[in-house]
Length: 455
Ligand SMILES: *Cc1c(COP(=O)(O)O)cnc(C)c1O
Image (cartoon, rainbow, N blue to C red; front, side):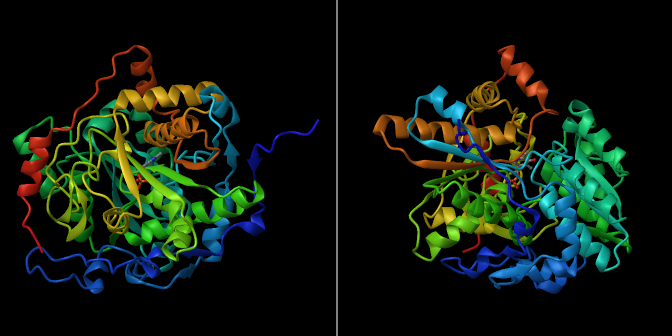
C-alpha cells in the first residue's frame, strides 16, 4: 500500500539562504513614515536610536533578496526549520470538498508560533552591533516569549511590557518569558511617563498593545544602553518571515501542486506576508493568478471597516505616522482571545496591496473562528492558536465554495501557532460562553477623526 502524500519535510540544505523583500516588486512606492510634528518623512537615521542598524537598512531597502547570516540560519535549524507542510485530508473529507487543503506548520518550535523567525534575526543583528539590553511589548505573550527565547540565544537582557489584561489572564506565557530570563512588567506600568499617565486615568487599566509599545519605546530612549525590537508591522519583520513562504514554495512543488488560494490571519500582517509574499511575487510579475485572502477578527476590522490612511503606530503617539489600514490608534480593541490580532493597524506593504486589489480581506466573529478551530482539532489532531483559527476559518470557507462550484482548487494556509497556552478560549467555546464583539463603528469613526488627515 502506498500512502497518500501527507507531508513535506525539507532537508536542512533547503533552508532559504536569503530573505525575499517585497519592496522590490510593489506596484507603487510605499508612502514614507511621517514625523507627526513636521509632517515630513522620517529619516532612516532617526530610527537608529531604536532599531538595529541592519534592520533600519532592511526597512528601506529595495533589494529583492537579502542574505541570511549563517548564525541566524543555524538558529533557525536549532528551532526546527525548515518546518513541515502538511495536507489536511481528514478536514477535506469532513467538508466533502473537492479542494485540496495544505497548511504550513509554524507551531512546531519551542514557543509555538512563527514569531521566532524575526526574533532570532533581530537579536542576532542587535548582538552583532553591541547591544546588551532590549525592550519590547507583548499582548498575549507570543512575541514576548519569542524574543525572550532569541535574547537568551544571543545573550541579551530583555525587558517586556505585557498588556495588563493578558498578564493577569494568561500567566503561562509570562512564566515562559521569565524561564528564558526576561523581565516582565504589566502595562501600563509605573516605570514610564506614558504608563503613569494611563494609570492615573484608571488604576486598573487593562492596557493595550498600543500603550505597551509606547512604554517599551520610552524605556528604550531613556536608557543609553538599550534598543528596541518590534514583532510585526515593519518591513524588515515581514522580510524575515519570508522564510515561511520560500520553504512552502519548494514544498508545494514536492506535492506537484500550485496554490490557487493563499490564506492567513492578520494582526500586524507578518505571518501572512511571510507565507504569501514569495507567492505574490509571481503575481506581481504577471506570472500567476493565485488569489490572496487575509482574515481578521470582526472585532478589530482594520481592513474591512477601517480606512487606508496615515495613523500613529501606538496609542501614546510616540511613533511616526504610518500609512496603513487602521481602525484608529485610540480604538479600544475588544478583549477577544486572539490577542495577537488586537492591533489597530496593519503592515504598510500589506495595506498597499489590499488597497491596490492584490490581496482581498475578510472578517469573522470569535465564535465562527473557534468553531473552525474545533473542527480542525478533531480532524487533523492539532489545536491551533485562536489567531490561526482565523486562517483555518478562511480556508474552510474557500473549500466550501469550491464544493458548491465543484472545483478541485488548491488551498494553502499558514498555521501561525498552536493553542496549547490558549485553552481558555476553547474552554469558553465548549461551554458556549464566548461573546461575539460587533465592531463599534462609531468609536472607530471617532478614533480615526482624532488623527490629522494627511493627503
Ligand atoms: C502574533 C501572532 C499573530 C499575528 O501577528 P502577525 O504579525 O499578523 O502575524 C498570528 N498568529 C499567531 C500565532 C501569533 O502569535
